[in-house]
Structures are given as C-alpha cells and as structure tokens.
Image (cartoon, rainbow, N blue to C red; front, side):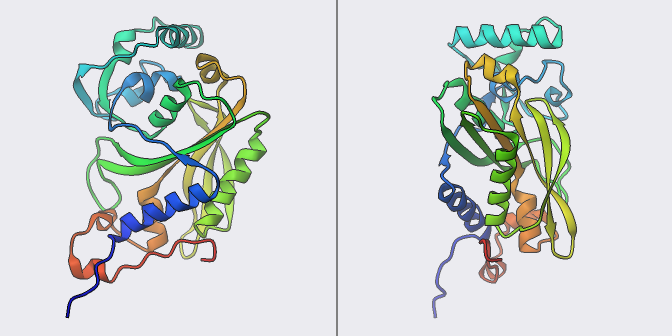
Length: 263
C-alpha cells in the first residue's frame, strides 16, 4: 500500500489565499528577502531614527545596496526633511537588511510609478528578531495588498477588506482607528473567530500624501497587511505556530485545509 502524496497543509493554505486574491482581480507581485532600507522604511515615510530600524526589530546585513533613481531619492529626502525636521542620510537608506515587512514589495511597486488603476498583492516571508515560542517565530509570512484608483475612498478600502475576509470564511468584521507611518486614515481589522471572539487580523489605510507625492501618483491608494501565520493558526485550530512548519509525516497526512467563503 502506497499513500497518495499531498501538499503540506500550510503551503496549501497559502495557495488558497493566492487563488482568492486572484479571483478578486489582484495581480501577484514579488521582491527579494534581502532589501535596502529605502524600500523597507524610507519610501514608506518612516524616519531614519524610527525604533523599527533598531537591531532588536530588524536584521541588518553587511554591505550597501544601490538605487539609481536620483529623482526619487531627492523627492524622498525633501519629504523626510520637511515632514520630520532632520537631516536625511542617503547612506542609511542604502543599508542592506532582511525585509521586515512585505510592504517593501508594495514600496517597489509604487517606485515604478505605475499607471492606475492597479490592484496588486504579495505573499512572502518577512524576518524580525524574536524569541521563538508557541506564538512567535523569527520568520513568518505576510500578505500585503495595494489598490491605486481614481477616487478610491476609505469606504472602498473597508469594503475591499470585508470582501477578502469573507472569502476566507470570516463573516463578522470590525474596524478600529489606528496609526501606521505610511497610511492616514488607518485602521486595525478585527474578525470574529468561533471560540475566540474578536481577534486582530490586519492593519490598513489610505497611503499618506507624502508617499504618493514622492512617486508622483495623483490617484488615491489604499494598502493593507496581514500576518498569515497567525491567521492560519486561528482558522486551522493550531495552538503552536511551529506546527505550520511541521515535518512529521503522520501529522501532515491528517491535516486538512478548509478555507472558502462557505465556511
């Protein structure tokens, strides 16, 4: 007797998320794990003395990256110095790091100065220093989305988020005002999970005008990011995040993935 092979259940979960986003009209985009701080932070209007740049919040890599778009560099410099009142240093922005957020991929899309309308998403690993336990890892997955359209409103953004979460079976959604450096207004998204109550799912908002000014985009833009690993834990009933990367064959054979709008 030879058992039939199957995908790892977490890989299947990721593929179903991709299918959902494509069905909603989004195109997948990609970027590398190794990133320069310019895309991970500077273009996202995070000041160069922001705590997220410290060694306890991101992994630094020796060496320097390159950016040839001098016009974009100058616009980001002006916006930082005007908004945060400090002397912006291009050498800091060129430092290499392991990306700490998939919003770096969104930043690269913005830097390409795309012509709206566009709807894109990315799913990939990000890296942050942490103590590994049942709810924390030093690498995990995020899903970032971006919509750039004329007259795209905050109401449109909330509707899009509801559509995404309904697609993965979370029917009850609430929004709470929040702060993120690169969006305004901003919200945290909460979903009601059976047996757990209201659980934080994602952060979202309309891109700040400083970012759109830097990349010379005149349309409105909405963006969001959600942590996939913890979402998978909730939806699959796991108590330990490390089980998402399990290698025990018998355990994997008995795992099932159910993620659809009819959950």
